[in-house]
Image 1 (cartoon, rainbow, N blue to C red):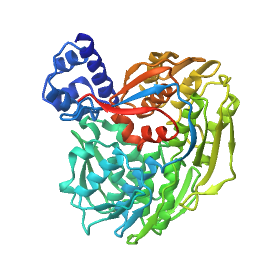
Image 2: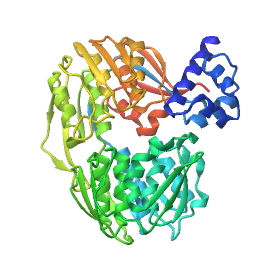
Image 3: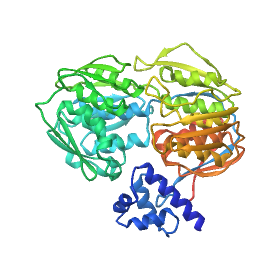
Amino acid sequence: MADYKGRIGNLIRDARKHRGLTQHQLAELLGTSQSAINRIEKGHQNLSLEMLARIGAALDSEIVALGAGPTHLRVDGPTTLSGSIDVKTSKNAGVALLCASLLNKGRTTLRKVARIEEVNRLLEVLNSLGVATRWIGDDNDLEIIPPAELNLAAIDEAAARRTRSVIMFLGPLLHRYDEFDLPYAGGCNLGERTVEPHMSALRPFGLDVKATDGSYHASVNRTIEPVRPIVLTERGDSVTENALMAAALHPGTTVIRNASSNYMVQDLCFYLEKLGVQIEGIGTTTLRITGRTSIDVDVDYSPSEDPIEAMSLLAAAIVTKSEITIRRVPIEFLELELAILEEMGFRYDRTEEYVANNGMTRLVDLTTHPSELRAPLDKIHPMPFPGLNIDNLPFFAVIAAVAEGQTLLHDWVYENRAIYLTELNKLGAQVKLLDPHRVLIDGPTHFSGAEIVCPPALRPAVVILLAMLASKGTSVLRSTYVIHRGYEDLAERLNQLGANIETFRDI
């Protein structure tokens, strides 16, 4: 029993840190003391099912759900995959486009939207503001119709706090209201460090934001507008998207420098062009946007495919030494990853390029071949696009684990994410944590089945699942809610390629 309480305590501690909460802040959310949280995390406190459910809600982590326990995955391996699979549309593009739909007074129809938890939460927020949304047909098409006036006072605070994307409402809303409040994720005081990159982008439009206790309080000075290029202090995706959405309803011409040119930013640009916004420099770090005073058009847009899901499927094929065909791969956003894999000895075929349904993004089909890999000569680290994508870095941990030699991964962006990669050791890998940002991986690994509690970070959680596909025997991945936040039916789709993954609950 003590061991079980310790495991639950560790899970709560990791989820709390992932949400950026201190013990004191979590205690305030739960109406208890910091000392009680300390005891819980050390496994020294008895917990009722009600308290576990409350902690799970506060941390946005499905530790337990009353009436139906959390979802787990049982994986029988080792697996050899075969067949073909299509890459689904981009999660991050879908989130940005949902926020951008607030710019348009007309109807927006988005095609083949990723039906994941992050999208569901944003829909709950939009619905509470009076936006009408409905899913159409069997292909996950989504129709969005805004009201004449948004009801910001009725915003679903619980849903808003469960998504970090709500900060991207600032850009669309600053032209509609002189003052407004938005809840932000986790209820923690994110402070100026988190708000400041967005403020640097939006201050030239007259926006001022104060981070109060759990809310952003925004006020707009209409006499202020951009008079010179906006230089982003951080080449972040969401920061660039916020600036783009603010510029879309500014009737003059706005220049944004040090802009992200990543895949979700490009999709947002293509959508804004359909709204009548003129944008020069798409795909570069300098954007020139000529906005409109008002946007009221019925628009139909197809977001492109997700390069991170494509990388997930590539990693699955590599670690299981399988031959599969991955269709509709957005090659522009995977070229560097593939170049590194080629240096490691990965063999694959690719088709000629063709165009995605948005009419712009370049796609290919990739066929993987079983390959004997060797460690790369240099460390693997992410950079802003066109560098290696930060969300693709964790997949190189499980790939490096099956390669001959020693690989250094440097995750310089996130404070704690590299730590979760050491969970691969429970499956037989040799992953050494050098510091919170760097891991050293020795291979090759002969994976063996184990039972692991899902870490609260999305990509490391999927990396563990992929390693389980290559593990001898039966593995169990517990509390997999975080995977559903970023992937639609991942286990079922892997099963269609020949995996043996069973979804189950304890209760």
